[in-house]
Amino acid sequence: MNNSNSTDPSKTPGGINLSPSQDQAIEQVLNILLQKCPAQFILLVETSGQLISAQGESGKTDLDILGALIAGDLSASQEIARITDQYQHAQLIIREGSKTNTFISEAGQQMALYVRIDKDVPIGWARLLIQEASNKLAGVISTTAEDVGKLDLDLSEEKLSTIIDDNLDSIWGG
Amino acid sequence: MHINWQLRELNLKIVYYGPASSGKTTNLEQIYSRVDNKHRSDLVSLKTHEDRTLFFDFLQLELGKISGLTPKIHLYTVPGQSYYSASRRLVLRGADGVVFVADSTPQRVFANLSAWEDLESHLISFNLSRNHTPIVVQCNKQDLFGALALAEMKNMLHVQDLLAFPAVAMNGEGVLETLKAITRNVISQVQHQAAYA
Image (cartoon, rainbow over all chains, first blue to last red; front, side, top):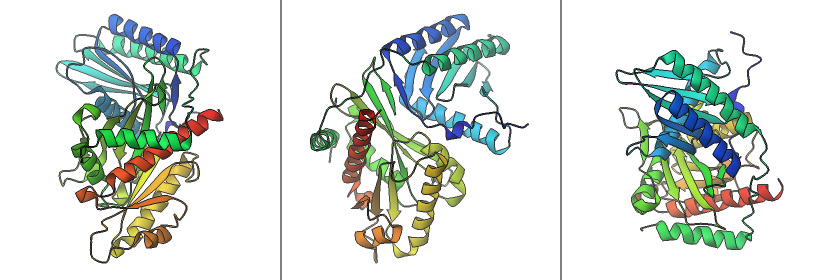
């Protein structure tokens, strides 16, 4: 297909400055998705792999590692679509398993949504809810929140260097 | 970069870039083995059956608070082989800083130059440039016979303006110094950008 009207996600730089109100709005969207599907587990990550939020049963899974892998999975699929000239908005990866189905969806250009659902839940129903939630999540991020924080470490270069060096020295076992 | 003001977390991404077998994964393995497990994640490696990096390695470090924010540093490596250029670009996406791990042996001059050009072309594709991206160079394998000195390596790569460190990553030499330098540069850049936002 001709994707000239689609934004190439690979050109989108990372960077989300998430305010408390946006964080709450995201929690609400994920909570509704968790209940309505119903989903077992949901994870929202930035497309560069950094964890934003999680809901449901994660067990002993390391969520930071899972986030990095989900972002890698989505970006690899997007790139496959891009180089074959098949990239379209709102890409969705579906993996059908014997007990669960998993979905990885673009949520705007800056986030990826991972949802794990019991096999009994119809895929069409889950897909509909996930795409709806993805659109809402993208909307939350696209608005400018009034309570967004301003990053002001208020440290001189020298002081910042000392703090970082001391910080890394303190966790370095030698 | 991702800031969560609710959790007061500052998430940063640093990518270890460079030619095949220059020691990118070794850097992360050394960091993993030396950092207290309360301050790091497990090390994840997506490897080929020949034990080479297929997509990326990943390790997260959590530092103590800086001005009330907890920095979480996400470290990635890229696959070095030339045919993995598309994968390297994907891993580089959203990076706040880059460590270029060069191989100091004379036989690898072309591989270093080629990897450096590859990095620059990917940065340009993200509308970034080396002047606006914190980059630190690590000249690894300094213990090997005939290894080029730090100054020769900087000349060869045309990176006289960048911080560079000699290293023997296999023994851990130069690994912490490199990590400190890139972390300093990245957080300094974040602070600088925020001041002018």
